[in-house]
Image 1: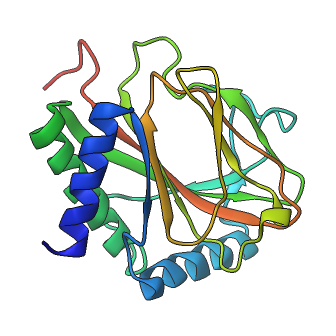
Image 2 (image 1 turned 45 degrees about the horizontal axis):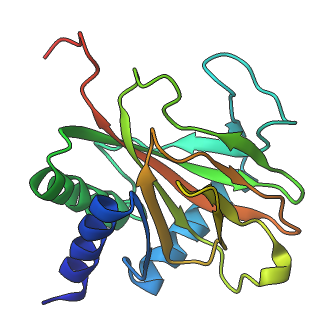
Image 3 (image 1 turned 30 degrees about the horizontal axis):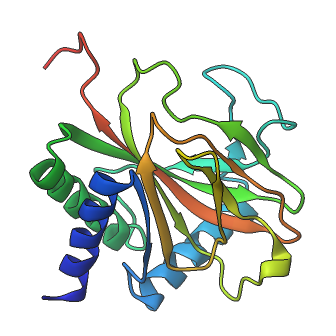
Length: 204
């Protein structure tokens, strides 16, 4: 079995059993570095905007990151391996878990030092289309003292802190796990993705 297929099988088993998982090394180091370089360059040139809380407003006390959405139909050269990997995961999740996923959406996210994202649920009202949340990290040489962990609140009342090491991917069911981003002492880069189903009432 090739490593990519093994990653997919691991993710399917973990989502079915626990509702979340962590994968390491889904993309090559070179592909991850290319994403990090592009994200940093876009941020430096002002192409990332302050993220919104809900549909309308920005509120830095709750969410301090800056984002730029991918064009999933025409990804850049740096984005293409990641977009293709996401699509392979989406197809596999439909086959193995029958989730009815129809598309992916993704954006770069950059958190300045000290920024956070308060505890929240990606699908709070069980009416939205997001089914699987995916975070992919781009931070080389990240150390525990740098902070910036994703804190995932588990079903048994405990939590799991996941440090944002480059090449690490976290996947979890969007309507099940509250989570937050803890402040870091250095700039923190990632890609946030949601695998979506068709919303009720949407035209086919």
